[in-house]
Image (cartoon, rainbow, N blue to C red; front, top):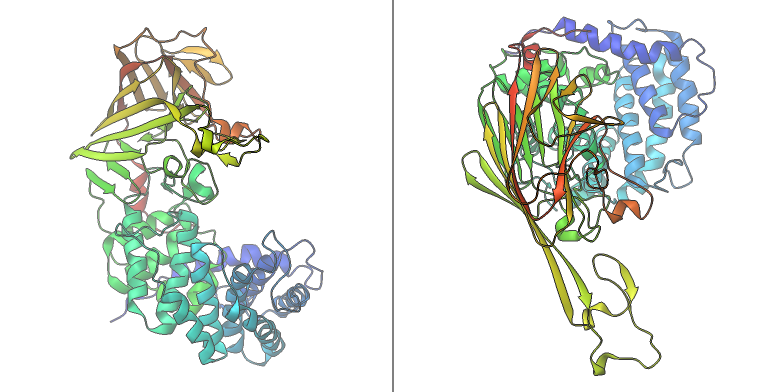
Length: 582
């Protein structure tokens, strides 16, 4: 027997939609200048959903119809002769157009069931979808998630305008296999693309194609994401291969997926995540259309399961460990793609943060380690080994070379040699043909995760080079016991320091096992973060912002750093037991 309707959720979704749609109806005939094709289509979808919903202020509104008609005219004008849409940095892009066609097809389903008042809207949507179908049927992609967005558009086209060629093309893409690993992470490891593209696309395909295995893939991803939810209500992204790897990502976009699968499976842990995703209020205007198209979303959630603490999860494929207790939530990361590819590149996991620690309002957002070794950038572990239940070893060995003269057989009298990238720089010197004198530097970081924080042991071996450990605390508190350097920077040299925010705190205590004394506050040349030449050669940086505390010196060095959390009893996850708010 299905669960009863959650009327408050439906009303909240309608109010969120109205906040987008009602202003569009104030001047329904006004040209929507400056709106991209994706924005235009999403607005039409919301306007039609609001027209259909009895809980919307625009239910049955002629002004909603007029505004939708105006936006559809602008959307049709943005369509090129290929049926693809103009605009954006991806030129003549089938996947970018697929995002728009997905919304067009959803709006078509909603409009087609609304009676004669939306006849012209329905016809315009069908015209736009039909014009795009041919290019989507034959078009290609350039990122992993694009495959599933494009497949979802083809499946939606088939749903409204049946054509077996569309399904055959979907089968071609799906025959490659869904790019989800043994730990439930998609290949891009991105919260943005999991929540906005892969999960919703695969759920749609599961419904249209009757493929339970595709819904199972989404459930696996959501299960893994449970262990990546941080105490501040965001999802861990340090291991992502996309643009979210340097930014926090909210849990809210996961709401419809956790909610839908909680209702359909009865899973209390998914219900808890759905309630946590809605704890800050429902502000997603797209939820109304989704609830009309998928009525199970409107059903009451099963009882949420209590969160289990302490808990520990190690994602071997991403090389990321998360340890949560009532006192601290700690993340250790050693899965960067940079050591293997020897470059910073879009599509690679490049974030050099290797540890985070949450203790209520006191948050250590990033721990990073710079080394002044041939400008090859900060520490990014090439390997991560689990040496005990809660203990990990992260290592990286950097190698640079000096090159000997070419052998006689490899010389050219004209001095013209191949332009080659040797991993650090490029030059017309035929590097692979030359004998090498190598210089190496090894960094080893051992992390022992505790219920109240972590113990670090950092060993730097190799030539005598400067290094700097940077601890970036989230604004809201103040470091106590460290010497100020100005510009939001502090130096820790001897005794312990405490970062206190409200009733919560993180204490840091460092000690030197081997090596010279730590650098004092006068060594600004050492106590700094160096992003490495991949950034500086183009005038860029991936530096953090916040309150930055530094330890540094001239290696070789072995040092220990103890991180201890103390916090008030309330936790951010208590919000998961509260009701839906708007």
